[in-house]
Length: 210
Image (tube, rainbow, N blue to C red):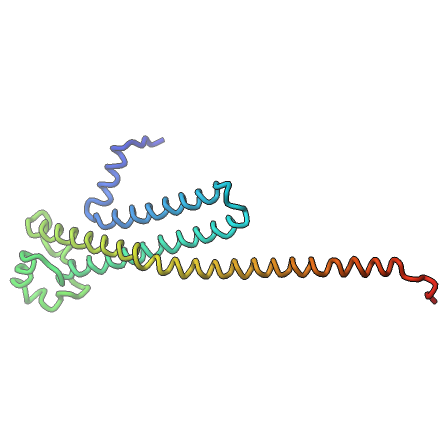
């Protein structure tokens, strides 16, 4: 069996995320949402002060909230990450040294700047100061955009979507509860009538039978 240690975990993280810190931000953010949601569900599930009827409503609501939180976070942050990365790789956003390199090679790249068929990751010579400068700016720019997208998703988009879904779930719960209560009330009203009819039939004068 493989041995797990802090060093092996750190090595795995470094191997997978050293060239793309923004990816680590997205993964850790999604994990954080998941752990937070599980903790919230557990707090409801194991709270003896909350009735089973309330749990049957609150737990599905928390699960739907978790789904909305994680999905919207991943979609927004990953979309912004891809878009920002493309801006750098196509030369639309570039540090001064890269811009000078593109200007020196206008015949090759001028008409391609900003278009998807230009990828500076494959064009700039690796192991040079030019590529290192480009890679650093791209990493910092993409990470900053991802963090901004995460803040937007967490504080604006997900609360709006979560409130809409929670409102819908609550409405369905209230309607279902009201229907059950109405059904119960009808049964309670009808039962005395059934008992009264049985009582009258029981004492009905049998001499009138043909």
